[in-house]
Amino acid sequence: MQYLNHKWWISLYLAAMFGGLGVQFIYLQIFLRDQGFSYETIGLLLAVIPAVALVTSPLWGIATDSSRDPRKILLLLLILAPASHYLLIFHKGIVGCLVVCVCIAIFYQPIVPIQDSLILRALHRYGGDYGRLRIWGSIGFTIPALILPVFWMKPELGRIDWTVPALVYGGYAIGSVLMWLRFPSVPPEKAHRFSIESFKLLKNRTFQILLTCVFLARLGSSGLEGYQTMYFEELGVPIHKLALFLSLGPLSEVATIFYSQRWMVRVGARKLMALCLGALVVRMAVTAFSKSWPVLIGIQSLHCLTFGTQHVVTILVVNQLAGDRIRSSAQTLLVVFTVYTSRLLGISLSGWIAQNWGIPRLFEIGAGIAALSFLLWWLFYEDTENTTLKDGMR
Image (cartoon, rainbow, N blue to C red; front, side, top):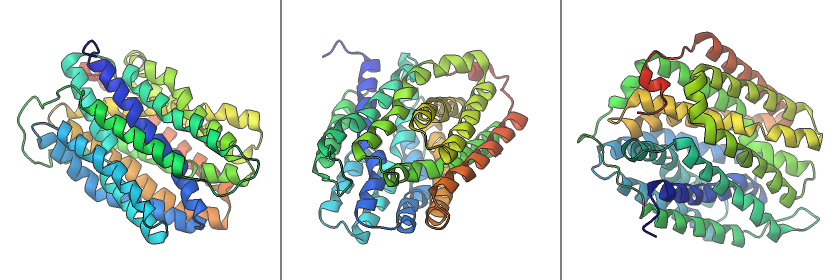
């Protein structure tokens, strides 16, 4: 298989990595619900993940930037992250689930920003378009939702047999490690020391506006991410149909992620991100007020903008602001101040709101927060005059 170049190996790695993430992301909430936990308890368990990751992920990012071979850091995480899930074999109660959530925070959460930074570094050295490779992550993420429900084709909702998902997750984990073996060499351009230089980005106005607006967007969508599967399950949607419905999100990303980098070069980050944030407002509002399946199916496809394109634009801007020296720690810092903080606040409050006001109210509140994010972005963000930023990647 020597004829495969670095682009193919990265694509296969992303398919395997996000395939495992698809099993965890789609089914973790259902698993916790299957154990009989209340909405509030589920919210607290899920909130543990960003709370712990706030502290541990920056350390992983800094360690990656200071390493002579940052791939070794990624390999360690790829082994420890999936291994920690199998602790549930020994204890599925509140203690076991809590321990696994802590392990997810420590070992799983840093993987995505670190792998993105290494991929961007590889593409800088060897050439390539991030969006064209990242679509394989979306395809890999979708496969579990399309295949696993075949084992649950039953008319009534009930407890799920988690043996098959566990085996599928293990297979993806092994695949990720095998693809890592073919990951291109990505040493830093200069030798670095363990440093907190990435925190200086917090003084950059462009970075500040980006963090604020992405934080609000993620905060607004946190209820959707944490409780959408349980909401539709409550509406009586069989688990196999629910999984197929959720798979429409990452499937819709394929085309937009493929072209996102080129769109950013042509129209700029300001207009493209505004489109994404506007789509999030629509998605949250319609999900809150509509129970029509044709409408909900259509609105689910907006995921291609509300996450897919938004994600690409965000990491490309940060990649250019950071450069090679602090690439990994800057991407990790972005995730810490947007994803982790928004999930910590959003999921914690979501559990209480869902328990006392109902899940649809989550989506109404989320639509309002998303509208604020859109307004702030449009008023205060300006596309940089830096030509390297306009060109997408250096």
